[in-house]
Amino acid sequence: MQKKDVEQKTLRRDGQDGAQATDGQNAAKVENELAEKPSPTLAPPGPRERRFRQTELPPHFIERRKHPRISTEPPPPAAPPRLEDYAPIIGRPELDEIRFLARQLQAKTVKMVNSTAVGGGVAEILNRLIPLLNELEIPTRWEVITGGNDFFEVTKGFHNALHGGDYHLTKQIQEIFLAYNEQNRQRMQFTEDLFVIHDPQPVGLIRSRSENRGRWIWRCHIDLSNPHRGVWDFLKPMVGQYDAAIFSAPAFSRQLGISQYLFFPSIDPLSEKNRDLDENYVNKVCDDFGVDRSRPIITQISRFDRLKDPVGVIEAYKLVKKYADCQLVLAGGGATDDPEGAVVLQEVMDAAGDDPDIIILNLPPWSALEINALQRASTVIVQKSLKEGFGLTVTEALWKKKPVVAGAVGGIPTQVIHKLTGVLVHSVEGCAYQIRYLLTHPEFAQQLGKNGREHAKENFLITVNLKRWLLLFQILLGMAKPSLPAKG
Ligand code: UDP
Image (cartoon, rainbow, N blue to C red; front, side, top):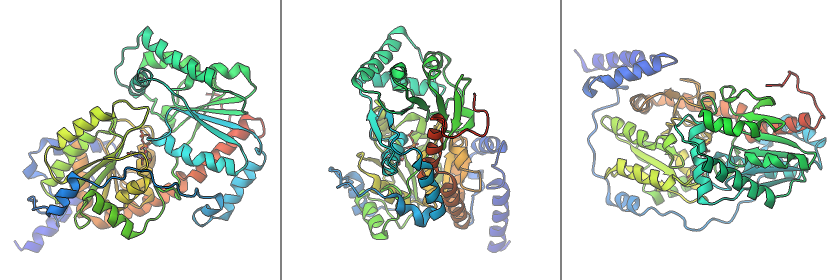
């Protein structure tokens, strides 16, 4: 048989075994089947693929990977974008609508409270939402609760338990949680018209509700679809005292006696994390971190957290690497409310072993531009979470027109519509298979990226989110009525 015939055959098999076979319910089955086959019988996802042998890495990359040039000082803060700057992206009518909705709320005051100023998706959103509300003349304050290690160990345990993990909730744990909430409550003042309390950590601040006439909103960013019963039973009576709760996906809502709303988290297209970058800058960042732009780059950006499955990403990369030359970048950092980061980072380094093509970057909190550059330099972006509230890193990748391979959990399927705006996976093997498929089918990868950008623009930009906040504030202050009965 001629070589050309063989290649055509391979292409047809790809269509059957790869992209077409892995949607919906079949995905896990196909992935399991793939996992069970010994790897030599795995159909190569693409004709351009050959079994790969490690090539010699030039010494300057090895050196840079051992000693990446990570900035030790925060850069001077960039001037925050003004509302007007969004006109070229979202159009003037959309901006006019935002201003119109804000007009009635002018001089109403808002307080937002969460548990960390840096690291993680909530801080990322608040950093941009709050300046925009202030620009709209809705004075908005952001306060961060404080606590000792014992408190953040408890809240991290709650976080994992609410995502369905095992947990032993003792009386002492409950007391630690309530004592720090009370300490913060005593320290803070509650004089605003609207209070938005983010996530479970500060949920107990609701005890101040009786002292003022304000309206209280609990914004839950985590996946509550299968919470640990004991932890949820402990928190639920506090949540029930709010006027409204907001969740990031319909499946996360719970039986509560209060109104519930669906808000998608959002990214700011003009922030340092997402704005367009000069190609020279992208090259410089890659150079600083020893990332070789002449070869495919697979990237996952995430806090070092087991629920983000960084070790699973390494395993998937190792399967891919048998067939395709590529590098893996795992870039992350800590959040002040996440005490597990250092332990998980060590687990990741152990799993990486001495593979010179796995680049692990522990970045400081002021690395938005560097993360932006790494995302832009990537060939494929992975977010192989096992549990996920929403996954802003996915939104960031979609906005940058990158093909995304992501775990089908939490809010990710809202963003990644399988084979339209990215691909969803359910296992290490599935993740490896889809990465290989995208590496060998660049036109398909490019189309996913284009679709992803449109999806993000339509649904997950800060301006869309801002409009929803304005409407909700109006509803809660009795200025507007919801069109549907909102009682949950
Ligand atoms: N992020 C960051 N530095 C890091 C790791 C993550 O700035 O080292 C950002 C990331 O770009 C994204 C956010 O933190 O904007 C993570 O949000 P996501 O919803 O993906 O996950 P979370 O950390 O909130 O669980």
